[in-house]
Length: 367
Image (cartoon, helix red, strand yellow):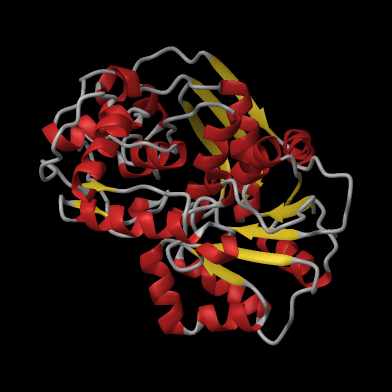
């Protein structure tokens, strides 16, 4: 009976079907994206025990059918890494833009229904970003100031998404040492303020060895410039809070890499959080296991923080009780959580956020 119940869940939510389809094994590599419940820390989230137990039963059921329980918005950090040109059916905006741009695989922003059908059939409609012609650049972006740390990549992405919306920017200029973490935050920000699903960094991303290759003959729709005033405007747009007392610090949207967890742990080592400030650090479940083995989780917990997986506050709609103002290093979370949960947001660097968790006060600023 329980099994038939989960068949019905998949049929309704993943296939949009009122008829109950017995769920067979998946036809292609399939993973579960982020969920609303941390299977280990659900009580801290404020999730009822019965819902947490129901999720565990559901994971067992779907796992037996070939759905890998990565439960993260960054599946590419834990083994789901498609190759250049591979056709995919991915959900979640920050994952889609990373898949298209950084990996050079091909996906549109799908929904539960289309991904559910694709998992069972191994097929997805051949349109949008699956076609060469739709992957060419549209806007040239000249970056006039150094963009190096995570915060600045988030600011660049947030400013850019508002302007180009769902077009394909091609970025040149003072972009220093782009790597997984920075491109992850850049894409998440651009897909939050706008609808960017693909971008090109000539000489870095795989489909653009040059500006000319990025546009592939398409006329440039507009040339944009990113300098000090654009950077400040993005920072001010993200920082909507009026109170400097910080109730909650959230780090890890998109989910933190193991390097980011280490950075947070090292900044907290030997220190204690303000008693009135909560800190949640989010990372994929597989990387939390690594962080535990490395001692990073212990370092964060000794300071009073919590390392969570499988979810984030914007997806779960659960925050610590009484939160009015929070701080985050995520432009995406600063964009969405005020509207979702009615809280005020401060955005800044990881160091700014850790200091806010220690002091209980926001003192971050734009350098």
